[in-house]
Length: 232
Image (cartoon, rainbow, N blue to C red; front, side, top):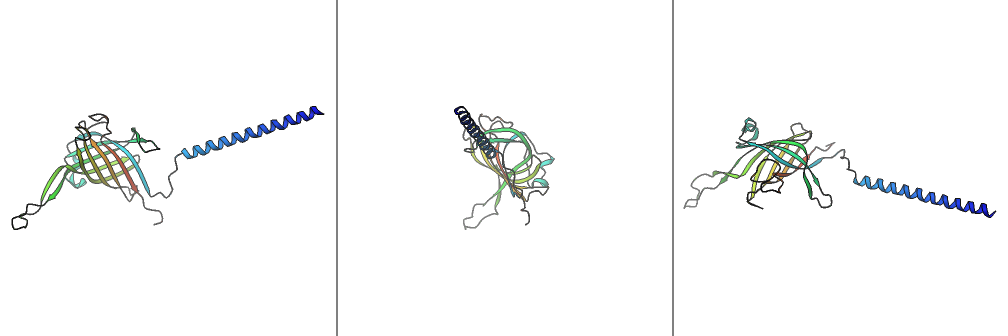
């Protein structure tokens, strides 16, 4: 009799251990799935009205303007023609720092530059009136900028300008610019957009490696594209 009671007690304990182990396993798997769900990239919203890209540009060539940079296309007289590739970047999620600015080639760009004709007032005469009309001043540090770019399957056109902010900074041989482009979509997928850059040119204009070394030349660009909201 005591023998059978002992067997029942052992069986109850064994079943209890199995139930606990099963519950622990299910809980662990559920927790793992929850963590994976948190880490998984979120799908794009069906009615998403804005797309944002952060890319790094690499200048592959610089030549005198060809037929591509005719004024009828760009809206200004060009003096420089550039070709670029665009590279994806890796960003640290806890603070937003870029850990790799040259992950993969994801697009290309073809650009034109020309000096901005700025206007400065002529010196006033002794009577206090202007002695001549305002005269244009070509500032080579600030330039008109035209760009046709492709990112993945998206093709865009942009018109804007680049302005020099610092020279020989943070080291000799480096020049810092900021650029802006008003973007349009020839295919009509987007109603508009804008591109802004944090740009640095070095003594070595072409390629990934700057001179002096250690800088991501020439640009880190942010691109925002806008779609028309469905139903409006």
